[in-house]
Image (cartoon, rainbow, N blue to C red; front, side, top):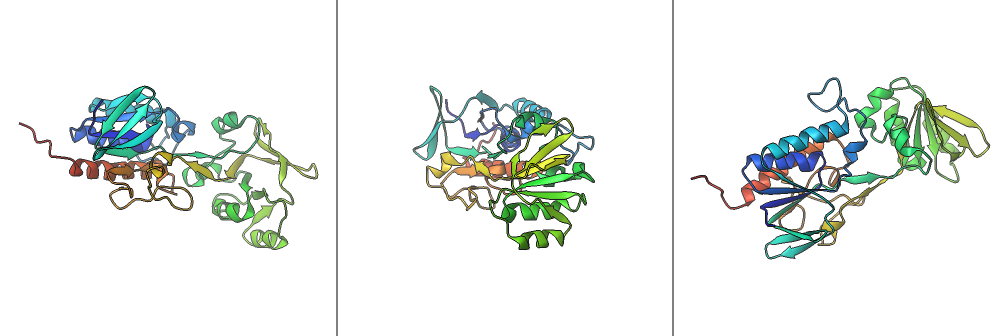
Length: 297
């Protein structure tokens, strides 16, 4: 199965790039594992054009329909291996092998979730949110918990003060520097005196049980526990990644490995739907221009 470009990832970046490449009249395949981070979005209100909001699954459904309208092929599965094949690459999906001179990596990342029961349900009910840039507006004036190490969670807690005067940092630190409490108090953030030992979801939010059995209730919890960037396919080929694990690319979304491009959360610390779409437009246009001309007639 030969294509001009294989896109690994069926999220916003991959599907947008497929639409662009299809409209450039290129033969493109999207390999979709069906686990886009966007599937966890109950409703986004900051994606351009959807003032009343749109859910992640609905957005992906429309993006997929649009890509298919312009001729993009879709393959459900996981790209298990990618090997150099002449000037291009061969990708293994189950027993199938796909070949293409260009590859676009749009595999995204996985947020690290708290070790607690009912995480999926809490996310669906918006009791747990991962991206304050996306949805902190919806938490306006609510009781907000930011959960993570003080070093990592403090900047996010400060960000949340734009939206509420009831922000608490739940530390994962085993020992707490008293200066941290003073520093956070100066910006109106409460530092819990100990790490929570339990974080069960409740009907109206999250209940944090501290080490001394004190219970704190919150409307919404923002974990700051890091993420796993899904860059293994290109890092195995020698692609440069930053300290977070995101793929390093240039202004055309080209990675440091020839003919491999990357877009979306796999390259950016600003994990936004609109950023992914922008990356996709840049990458797809660069890919089209790098391929042999496909003049009509």
